[in-house]
Length: 381
Ligand code: PLP
Image 1 (cartoon, rainbow, N blue to C red):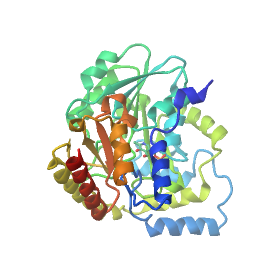
Image 2 (cartoon, protein in one colour; image 1 turned 180 degrees about the vertical axis):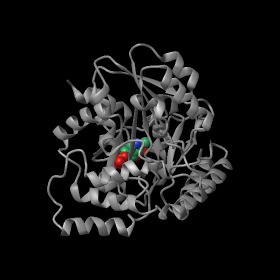
Image 3 (cartoon, rainbow, N blue to C red; image 1 turned 60 degrees about the horizontal axis):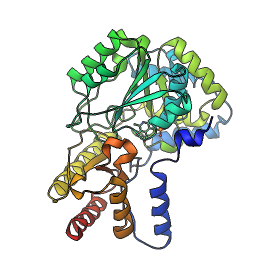
Image 4 (tube, helix red, strand yellow; image 1 turned 45 degrees about the vertical axis):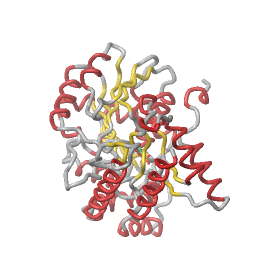
């Protein structure tokens, strides 16, 4: 298997390497390509992790994950999934890979929706190199392309991957859309793989329902979640999968042979995260909402840009069609001429080469500096 030809470099790597080189040469760089929140890991999580280290939890843990942690995850989902139906792995990415490796057989088809999380295609190919990836773009207003998905279903369709709240658009599903997806899964035999990593990062105190609440599709559902985003624990590497017991058993066999287990003391930190209400997000989500409003108002006043107001997560997907540039050229120009780093839309699918993603995980002050640059770009163009 020639993995290099199947997966290639990370689509965003070249740009971040260039940004680092320019920064090392002394150029001021504003980085809006950040994929992690800008608050500190809550202190009770740090304290619980340190305590676990002090108490000697530095050895292997149960491969499936600490029973206390899996029970706490089960409680979080109102026991719709028992501790035996939970697998703890090193991050949501590992959860995605383990799930795909457990279900995919040669030449299966996997449907992903673009713009997609940048790692989905590589994770699918790593799990099953012969798998066929069917990419379906979201509708013009980023709504769910239900009819288009229906048109692509066939006997080889093994899995549909959805990701709500959505990276990179910040859009969420309407109740009607959720019900239609559940109905579609119910009526067919493919798996729904729901990546819910931004679940708690919702604006206006709203809540995004989890597909785990729908008992009717439990035998065909895989829910992915983790601690990276909501608890600023990206470096802890902690994610988990919910699914039916036989699938979790297969996934655990994969997990044992690759990871053995997830870092034991990190799991104690995660346990502490679940024991307390995520009060830190009340302010942070308000702050994200304010940043989203700011950037939306500021960029839509400029002649060359448009965009949709996000409702969740921490990204703004900026429409650059009026520049008549590809997203890579646009991102390169912004970096080399003005020192602003953005993620080219092409990284999220070929249908989105007229977009770039701006991270909102930076202060309003930084966003204001970025807007000054975007203004200058419009004037210079
Ligand atoms: N899924 C989505 C949609 C993401 O945006 C990310 C990270 O950016 C991940 C999964 C991976 O999360 P983790 O850091 O827990 O592996």
